[in-house]
Length: 397
Image (cartoon, rainbow, N blue to C red; front, side, top):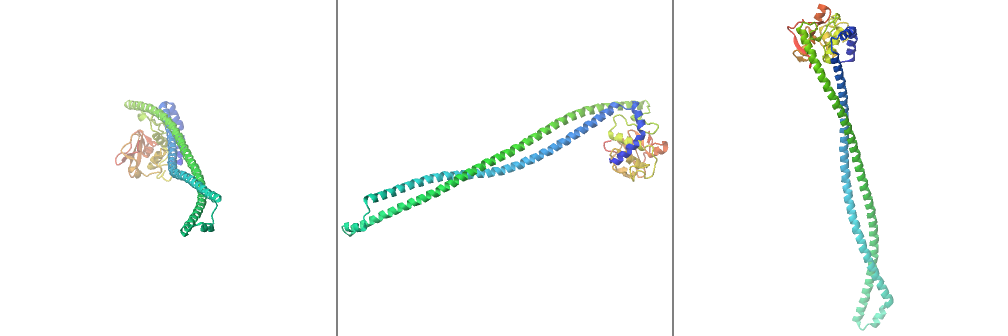
């Protein structure tokens, strides 16, 4: 219901405030029923608020869960990268061990070559190196000369080979030592990266899990509050049902004895109607709106250009009263009501409509512009045209 509509019928209802107050003071309605309905409304409002909070918490948890899933995906990527780093680290460590063994072997070979070279130099120094002329003069025949010269050449070649091997061994030892130093540096870098990524992954997962646990705990607390409110609401509803049953029994008894307040309603001299005990809130709003315009004049087309008017026709009157309860959002013409709502009579409200006229009954009372012409108020007990009318009612009423 728009604020303009609500303000309109509230302002007009002020005219009947004194009469309604007198009716309440006379005990024609049960205060306990109104109190119960008010408490139920308050409890339902609190329950709705808690449900909204639970929904908000659930959305936040879902967001955290999505974040956790995204974090898990990132964690899986980090773990995959970590596994690669670990595998690479193992390979480097294997190479490192092999390089160290190779370096030891090279150092042993260098030591042996150095020792052999040293022995040759010492032997040459101590024994003296014979000259070619001495070999020629001391040889007995050409064959011996060739043998001695070949021996000298082999000794020279061996010395040259030993020197070459020694130099190569030293160079290879230097290269391997440099490579080993690089592998050791790489090993330290990979080990630090592995440790850092493991710490990052663990911190990320722990933070998200902590947040999710906190949000779940908060939602559980709100759920507990909602359960308490729903329990209280159930008790209040049971009390209200008992009160409505008592009121219905009283109404039945009153009707059987000819009491004028049939249906639990009373009409004062100003044509105002009082809602019965236990009536739904929508029925109370319809009756209040009907009271607001009950004695206003009939104006053809009144209430169709705007809900705020100086007078109302039949469909304008019915539209105005129903709009007060939020059942219609704009004025409707008589023929529109033939297909409005649900078919058949309602428990609280029944609409009678055709292309030319529309009227309704509310809690047993007739609300009709024809009654206005007859008695000066749209409210009346009994009467009304039934033939040729389509019978409809608001859903749930």
